[in-house]
Image 1 (cartoon, rainbow, N blue to C red):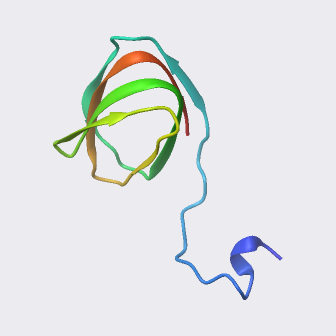
Image 2: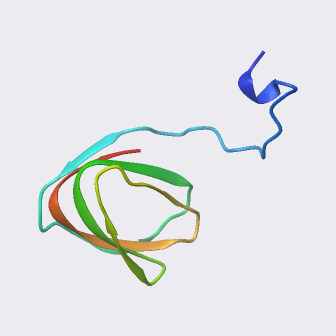
Image 3: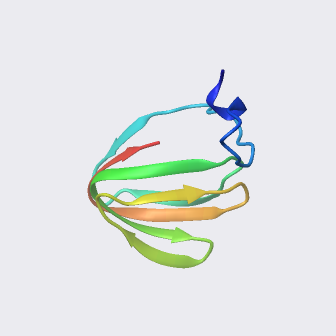
Length: 86
């Protein structure tokens, strides 16, 4: 039985995972503003990132998990060597 067919699990249907990866980005890298057309969950395991998401600025530090939705507008600047897993 698949986990999402289990009778004790009652949750919203989620899209299938399309990709998983690892990004290692150097400091002072600028990430241009872009609109996402998919769901994405990121985990920062090292480094830091000044993220602008839908006009709000936040500091992303190691141990942070955050999610994007389709239609979100994101940009940012890497402030220290960054390792991001998605």
